[in-house]
Image (tube, rainbow, N blue to C red; front, side, top):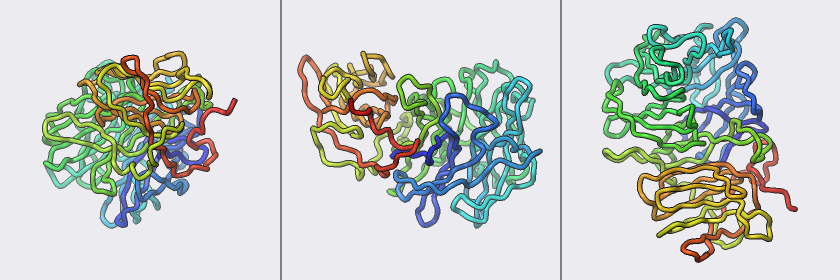
Length: 449
């Protein structure tokens, strides 16, 4: 339901599906820490496998940084592996070192494998296959040239690569863009001016391209400043691209799209944790979340909904306290739902969800706002999910808000609306690894007092 390798945290990742239906995730991995060191962390890819996109089994390290003197000698960052011939190809980010100002020097390299399970990689040479072109993109200090994502070109027999970059024509604070390049053979690339350059984004990371059933395209990009991700659509790869707004709220990042076992498209993304597993800790890289259904219908903006495949992990309804649970609430006016209380024997809220129709929020101890959003339309129903410290709220089945809270003790869920209190039945969540006790385990809740 949440995954990170033993003792480590997860950052950007890629998803694969083998012919037998087995899924594999390749992911950046590093220690829990508030201070990110570009040259000593994320120097390898972890790998895990699953049959259902929920229960992941760690399989060890699958790829690491290159030998001294190579473009990827210091770190390997976000990758995109995909089927190529009888095996796989992978475009990936390499970091060679730092600029005098301490900025990572990034470029994109290529590796091949004769296998289809995400293992057995061999590098194509010792140099990158594509670098930032200074005619259009910032190089050196405050550069960006990472997170490649490759698809078949819809205007030729070749390939198109989307890359996180910095538009050299804009101030760096608003220069986040998606660069693109084309190739006939994956080994020789031609760089073009930006595919998308909004002019109001600091970093547009982890771009994802997905061809939809009608032949049009969806692009997802993670926004550095908001720590969420947005969507764009276009009739063709070369555009014109239309901005469709946020798809994943703050706290959801680095999305990937893949067919679920039931054949529907789902999105998985990362979510952060806090150092020391405490409300006062600094945010750090975190874990892989459970899937969400990707819904794209006509001219409507794309949205993420509750994925029905998770229902198999839910127990029978109960009024008893549950740390990991899902509850549904119908609302006709302002409401506040208490999920956890300050102490086991009090009704003072320590974690609560509130909604007055279009305004949706989560509060922690003493009513501190942990997260809030304004809904497009007033909500008639809320679905709330808690897994340890993680809280997700779906408004009319659409993923709308997520946050972290390490305070409080499990209590029966109660909703207060129009001065009346009622108990909300919940369905407890069955965790895939309930007895796991390393640093990557699901938070077990506060210690008894």
